[in-house]
Length: 420
Image (tube, rainbow, N blue to C red; front, side):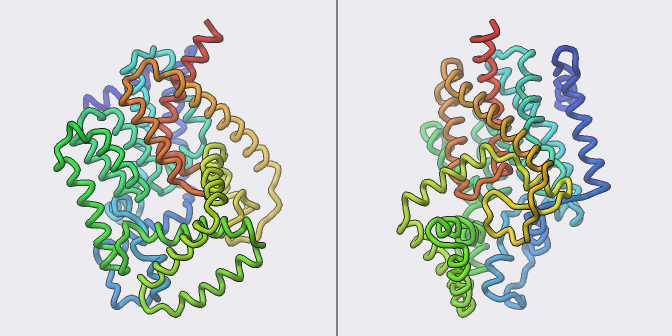
């Protein structure tokens, strides 16, 4: 009850020039829920989470009619926490959606709490999170579409607020990795930052989970991996984009068709995985600089991408040409004017947001502890660099809290310099 009271008080206090922006945001969340209940929309990833929920702890690989090739794409695709939320809701996804809504409501509160620890005045809070939350429409889409990005964003803000409690850090890291495999990259970072003051057994939970889920991968598909996505996505996307730099699309299609015929001859899933991994490594090692440029380009796209694809699904726009043109599998319509307006507007907004963040990163170093500052920078950098060549605005949501934190400091710096 105390937590709910604090949350309500926070939203009551968040006003800007007499406008109750906190309650306006809550109203927007309610309207999103109503829209999704009457007109539900989800991306393709949702089905993979549902499939993992159906198969969780019960899939019988030996009796499966799937081929070895199919197993790599359809089994052990996702880590278990979000599928468990779907499973707990009786496959209706309502439990997962409830947690997503709670995460969205917590997120500005958690960011405000983090800002408050450094004496930032109350007048800044509404500016900070309203500008960043509302200017980033994806947070709205993924509050009600069944995927775990918003939950992971809230967990990372919790991680920062509980940064002095090592047991909570270990528990939250385990939940993050159980939500999305990409957060494995944060575990060695936190171990390194706490290596002098942390007993080894603190990390038993996240490390134990990783080994358990890799063992499950070995049992199900014959590969020690936390997710088959770590093999198939680099092969289907990263490598394909790299090949398109030196080959025509027809040539690349021919290469993949030829390799598909080879893959079909493998008798085991592990053979398929090793073949794909080898092809990815060969392509990158043969073109290291080209790949590095593509990898960094994916990060830049992620920072500026207006989320047109997600808006297209949420508002049921007709399919039209995408930025990357890789594996979208649909005949493209000419992009309508409403999409151009949407893309231009939110690209500009995202550019301004990035300016706030960069200014904040440079400015706040003087005011916050050095270990926290470098922890925030490290989380943001390592996560962004883990995204790869296929940039997407949705991938930015997990570090949205950190960007909002830096953006708040950026506002302080700009206000102090130009307003005062």
